[in-house]
Length: 308
Length: 253
Picture 1 (cartoon, rainbow over the protein chains, first blue to last red):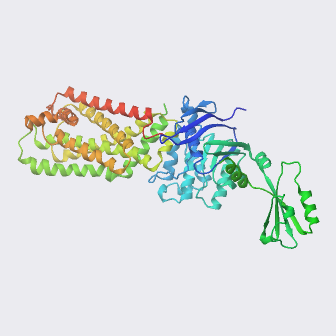
Picture 2: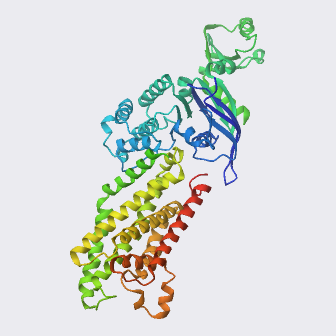
């Protein structure tokens, strides 16, 4: 199936000379949730802004559902809803007016029933006549989401949707994003919270220094890059790792009562058997052992560090 | 043509007028009334007639024009500066709406507001002085064209300005003085010959003169020239707006 968004050789150099994007190639599949991870200044927002028509690309092309964003901008833009990172809202308008305005702006006839449903879904219904400036940060964020959804986009960009949103509300938002995905909307979200990507995304893209470092299905990525940890609870605490075990990537934790071994799941030999044998040989006894997979966060940090 | 978008912007902008009713409409109406009381009734009573009409009646077109000019500029500039300032402009930029449609929405709303305001001032003036409108069609034409031209100017100002000061400075230091010196309160013919020549460089002279002609049939400059000047202003503003969107000036990186 044709990707819903195709980005080819996208570059952006700002007037200041700063090169924010250095040749981005990216395909986004229809109906997936893609999480774009990257440190601050990696180019996430610039990338989104170009696709949405807010920033002009220096070179390269973007098509949205087959429509070139420059030549066929009207068709391309009407498919996209954008929730910006900054809480940019009209101050004096009511929630209802500002959300209805967005729908009109995107060329859709008014549909009060739909706006009502969106506001109810986002727990904003009782605030519909409140002026936007009287709302809390989390509510303003939801107003921005309501505005983006008001014109029934088939692609939704969420630029750090849960920044500054409390934990409970974040859960609620994740659920809502999940429901949108189920209804067939393609969702691209940028985030600092790796937890968020891990929880929701189907695919993960990592962007750093204006380049896409990788795009991969989340499960495959975790498997491919994931490191596992073997933690041994020692009978007698150690002060230092014995010299005989220096070949193994070992660390001590919990005040010397735990020995942690890091191994790669991709290698044919994990080295666990050998390690355990050596421990026995040196009279280091353990009472318990457990293994765990590394989180996406650790994968991400190691990736960005590697390329930097 | 994205008619829904034009309507959305237009309605949204006009809604601001109702919300800020006092500032937008009542303010100018009250200050115009004060002009009538001071200039028309108190001082004007001592003047002989100007160009065959009483000074009070002579004042009416000039005062309407002055309010329409300054309010068009400030309304339109505020209308587009506000979303730039607050950042909500992102939505307009990302929407499937062309530059032309955006301008119709914003400028149309500002010009509508000015026409309403001009009409209200005329009605208010009627309470103070008796006047007649000799060429109603041209009166409306001048009112609408001037409102549109200066709303376009305001739109340009709102895009150019990068601070509240700049937004205030142009109406305060350019539009208001030019309107004052543009024959709102007097006939250019009352000036010494040298200043008459200087005054002809002031585009507002032509607008006020044409507008006054539509009331009383007398004008400082030929009415065709007034019409031509209005059209020229309109054309220049349209060209600048076209250039702004063409280049993305201050709107897009």
